[in-house]
Length: 309
Image 1: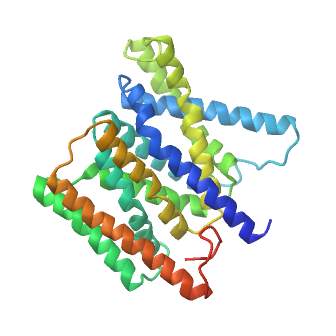
Image 2: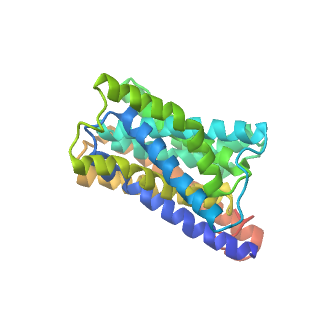
C-alpha cells in the first residue's frame, strides 16, 4: 500500500474514532446507575471476549495473524498501554456520570498539547515558537481555573496525561491494531473478571440486579469500546502524532456541546475565560501545523499523509 493511501485511510480511521468518542457521554449516561469501576471491568471483559472471537475467526479462515506474546518488551509495552487506558476509562466514565462532561472536554482539548510536550521530554523533539505559545495559552487557561476555583482541574489533567501517554505508547507498539488491543484487554481480563465475580458474590454487583435493557447496554460496552480503539490504533500507526493531535479536537468539541446544550451543565464566566485560552491555544496549534506543513511541502499537503506536519 502506498504511503499516501495509507495516510488517507489513517485520516478516516481517526475521524471515525474521535467522532464516536465525542458521543460517548450519551452512552455512559444511559448506565450511570452502575458504579464506574464495574463499568470499566465490563468494558474490559466484553471487549476481550469480542476480540478473542475476532482472532479465532481469523485463525479459522487461515488469515495472516501475529503472535501476541512475542517478547518481554512487547508484553511490557502493552501492559503499560493497558494500565493507562484503564485509568483513562475510569476517570472519564466517573466524570461523565458525575456531571463533569465540560471538564472532560477541557481534558481532551489539552491532550494534543500534552502529546507535544511528551515529544519534547521522551522523544527529545524541539518545539517551534508557536508551539510554545500554544502550550503557554493552554497552561494559562488551566492555571486560571485553578486560581479562580482554588482547585486544580485534576479530571482534565488526568485525562490528558493518561491518553496522551497512551498515544505515545501505541505509536511505538509493534503489533497491528486488533492484535495489540487483544493483548491489552487480555492482560486486564482476569483481574477485571475477578473484580466482577467478587462484586456479584457480595451482592454489590450491578449486572444481575438491573433490568434486561440495562444489562444489554452493559454487555454492549465491549463492542462500543472496541470499535473506536481499533480505529484509533489503526490511525496512529498510519499518520503522525501531530495529525492525530489535530483530529483529537473533534471529540472534545462534541463533548462540549453535549455538556452545555444537551445535559445543561452550568458554564460560568470563569469557565468561559479558561476555555477561551484553551481554544486560542488550539487555533495557534492547528495554524502552526498547517503553516509548517505548507513550508515543508511547498503546497498544502494532505493531513493524513505520513511525514507531514
